[in-house]
Length: 156
Image 1: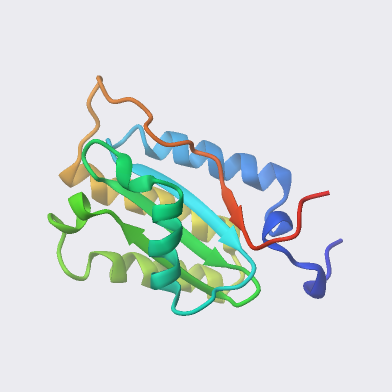
Image 2 (image 1 turned 180 degrees about the horizontal axis):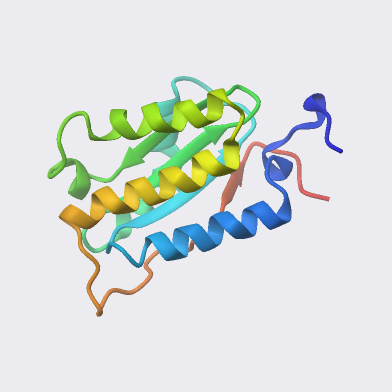
């Protein structure tokens, strides 16, 4: 059992849950040409959206052909999260696009349903992106589906 003071981004989800999340990303990306990644870290040094933007850049997510990458960012110890989408998405979606998705994610997190919240968010993002960036049979996976980690202890 992991106690609250032992929580770290690298053990926030069990290996089985990590596998479920990675599978969800792969399935969700079959709905859209958009690319989705999840980044977990312990602490957020400043506003969550600013940190998500920085991580997005660090992960080179802006290098997708259609500029349609999305980063779901969570600082697990600080209990903050954000979603950052690339310029290609933001040029097409309504102004409240990310706010609506964040409200749904917040509901799950408030009830400590983190795995369900992340997976639902992944599919909600993909479903919304499908309207603007529908899947095409020539689409290729431009970014890894794995979870990335920052400012955390190494997983033992």
